[in-house]
Image (cartoon, rainbow, N blue to C red):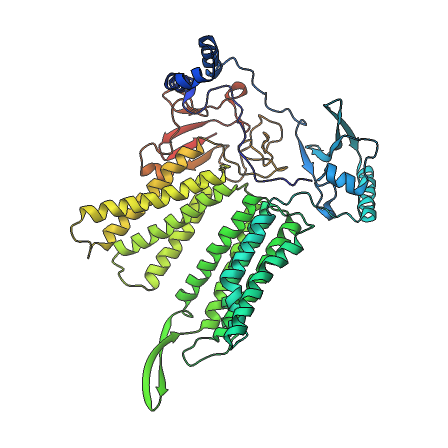
Length: 586
């Protein structure tokens, strides 16, 4: 059995050459052929073969193109047995449950649903080495009977649904490392084990248990990459949340701090509970990998927003108190109200997780998109700190924390609205993060090199590093996005730019090629949508359409058209580039 894996960017459809265009690809092909004659000769390829290879590498505008789907052509795979989490009957499951006995070379059985709601069961097997497919439309009653038969067969065979375990190794390794790195020493410390022998034994036994429990509990269960991601998020952030919760309920000391043992015990319980709940959340809501990344990212943002709010509201501010020791009095600082501060921090984390789940149901984020969103949020925090320093705020306090909080939230919203879900891969998202880090470091290094005395010029250093980070992230993002269409909608509900969650073309208007944004819909005015590209202000035409790329026209007026039938996208919208930072779509 297989579950849907992380989305991958497939080939885009269109009649025009993408990227560098046909001339650029031809030059690359000729250069490749010119610099490797020895290797080709070593393979024994004749000169005529080289010429033929060159011809094959050259793109042709006459190549056959796959036409966009007509209404009713798209079908999406559905869970065949939702209560068991079975997406597909694989040969392994079929053998264990004794299904389809008359098909010796059975390959799989799947359930699909068309856009109009029609249900189709597809069975695939081999005959004389060739695939044979049988597709049979079924009614709701027939599907219920099929699911009932399937459930009974599984129950009689004692089979359990294990369709994939691609994430199991990473999940078990991650929790083992958490056991070695935290739980192993936190358990004996929380239990106040006094003897060295007992502490070492408790450490080793806890570390071993951190491996055995996830290994044993996932032996007969489906474990996807999404399970791994969200379980490890819960395991790590659960430790942090548990530390706050343990300190919240622990006993008070004179300095306003809670019991250290209570904090450690809270981290142990929180980590174990978080890892378990993260795994079960995938079984319950079946998010994709990008959705899980989005939940985790906004959960982290919420945690930091809660802590900043607690500082601004007062609970996390320091106050002085008078302490007596052996007849002497001392003045020491302590947190004003740690319990209220911890409660606000944990509430912020919960709100962030809820916001991630809400946004994930409405916008189709990939793992790379979430990485780009993280860079946008960090850039917002940098910008807020820079603005505060330029305004004369030199000390840590409410103005600086407030500016960083506002900047981070602004960067998050701006990243979601302007960078948008583009379907970036994990590697492409990491490239954006690397570009952000490298831009920050490069700008700071150049400033440090050019300024004779860095003391007193911290604001200049912060300003240049912030601009460098934004420019680095923006340039890399612009390079990897390659005019990819925004993927805003969800599968079944359509998307604004004609690319649904399943990778097929769809539109909010229904049929392919019909306008996806109509007058009166949210985000439109008389059928016109405004797109702002703020990073284009920093770097000329950074976010402007590149000449020769699909999705842009070469006319001097800057009208945008796209490859496809009649120069229309899946939404049937065109656009005008008013400025490098502003586009009007209609």
